[in-house]
Length: 144
Image 1 (cartoon, rainbow, N blue to C red):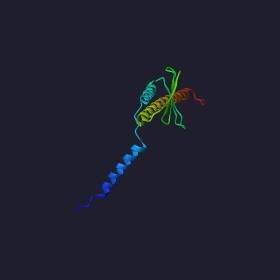
Image 2 (cartoon, helix red, strand yellow):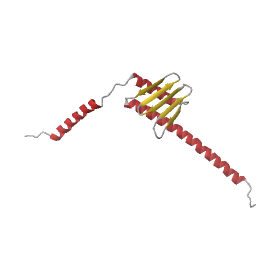
Image 3 (cartoon, rainbow, N blue to C red):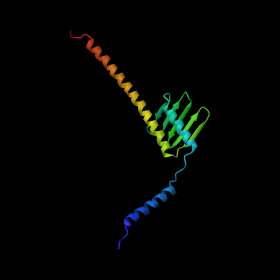
Image 4 (cartoon, rainbow, N blue to C red):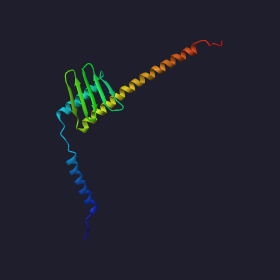
């Protein structure tokens, strides 16, 4: 006579309970058209070279400012505030993937701009040091 494997049955039962509770307390909401439009707007603004990107290190708010398009965006805790010269919109992005796309694109682009600025600063320092070195080495010595 074979004994049923209790361990496998318990795991299956626990998994079914987990799925039931997850669907009950953390339901998947359908992505709204507003969320999709807002995500596309943010991603397009981030791609524009004339957009200014800023991030607050304390509040982790992310800001997009585009003077040419006259659009300002504030991104914080899944809430996106989009302001143009006429209207202001507050949208909550429930879709994890859409919100992650915006944050990843913003952070990546901001990091690229920061690296570019850092390289410009280093090149400026190197040039200044080179000029100082040339002045020192090409000037007549005081003791001569």
